[in-house]
Length: 396
Image 1 (cartoon, rainbow, N blue to C red):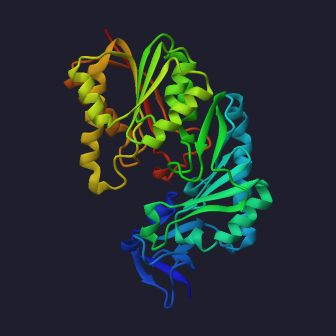
Image 2: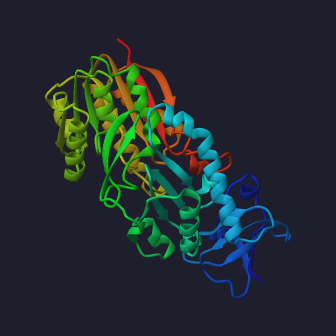
Image 3: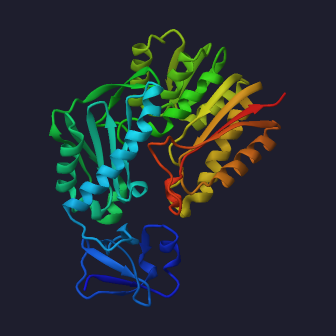
């Protein structure tokens, strides 16, 4: 029988709402169970806990799809996708009221579809299949997305290294309709050209949309530095909200070129400049030159994706925040972010506190924020709350 029986006491996390079963938590695996198959998960007394997909190659051996006794078939996936679309319809009015035209439609575990990411960019969808359980249903899911969302095109960006952990090859390209190489989107009434086929992740970081909008309260009249600027999203928001000047820094030449194009698209060439540089080196150099800024934005990529590299990530976050604080004028604003799940809110706070102490700066918290509502946080699945965005003021 397709069953996985847990060791004694290993069912507590599942009962608390989590969807993952690790290899080390399994006591007995049914004879003949193969990777990619649906299995029932039972506790050590044989009581049903849920149903999900098994993968022998992954440390996360089972990813649950449901805690009810139900068949995993086309009807099941249609219902799951419809649930996700219904939720987005409810929160979309708030997103669109800010003038944003793009949002996340399906957010993996948060929508009870572990390993599936779907973002809507105007009339196009960008999909990522990150786990074997979703990958074996690839064609079915694409068929349902076409039926339920009626997109002009679908681009697959299953080109992340995390697929290797599931023994899956990387895959990308246009898989339905006509897919443009780049597309103009709107974010908080501003225009951005994004590369859906080659850009980072799915082409644009949608989870920061509401956080970028908060710059309206902090940017007016400020000399601004945006580190790890990517395609210029925070930088151009700062310019739109009245920053006196904006300098964006990113190590990627392609990202900086796109940022410059986006500045032109919004007629901010006069106030926005972009530079190709390693942000760590740039901050160190600016500190040595005793440069000063009124608003600094730090939105780096994840410095760690595992506990094994946590210490180096802590050092990285400490350094960029320390350097940024040394560059801030009295009364200056620091917008500092972390998208590393393993850096908790409490740890991120401690890192910034340590940086403030070493830089001899006293900080006042103005806002503590997380990802937008299209990236929902689900109680019991801690990994769904990954984005931290703290806004501080340097107290004179």
